[in-house]
Amino acid sequence: MLATFALAFPAVLFIVDPIGVVPLFVAMTAKDSPEKCRQMALRACVTAAGVLSFFALFGTLVFQVFGVTLAAFRVAGGLLLMLTALDMLRARNPGTKTSEAETEEGAAQEDIAIVPLAMPLLAGPGAIATVMVLMAQHGAGWEAAVPVLAAILISLGLSYLTLRSAHLVKRALKQTGIAILERIFGLILAAIAVQFVFEGGRDLWRG
Image 1 (cartoon, rainbow, N blue to C red):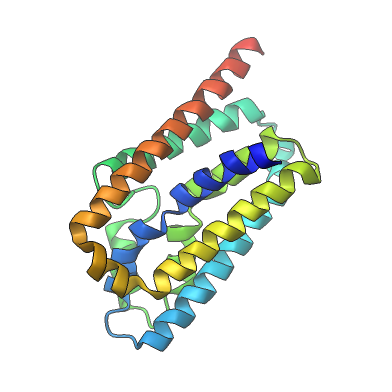
Image 2 (cartoon, helix red, strand yellow):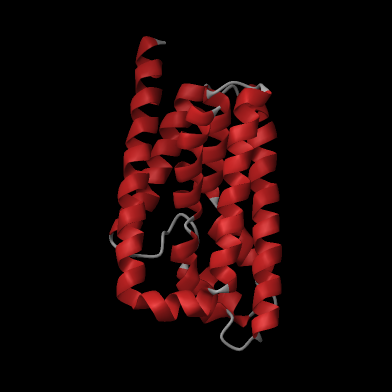
């Protein structure tokens, strides 16, 4: 369980990437009060945790319904993570999470907690694929579910703490500091993506 958590926690935290969401959150809530920002951050993180937990627990049904093997999904998830990691290494907003049009639309909304903050910024396709692969490759028992769900809850808890202090974080780190952290997270995420693709490709070859 500790080994599973050691793999799951950084994978989930870096794909959720709360630091990378900070500039977007600050831009979209520029006209909102601090209290409203905190409420939206809380609802967004709770919603994202619920979405990721649902797919972690019931995502394996996708494999059964569509006849997709774990190896194939692991390769697909690894490629998706790699695309996100490459954008993070270039300090760019990941295109796999949200587009410029979605960001502009979010800035015009009164409440951004569910869309686009919870989905797709926090619980995007990459995060969903990651938790599904983590659950599937470690079995369907509670030995796999507990560490993966713990990784989700802790990651979203840290995301809430980051977003509720988003203005302070951005002021302290400045754009350069955020870009440096983005690149570090992107490098680690790229290594996790390579591992996913390697293991999935190896199993496909053996199969």
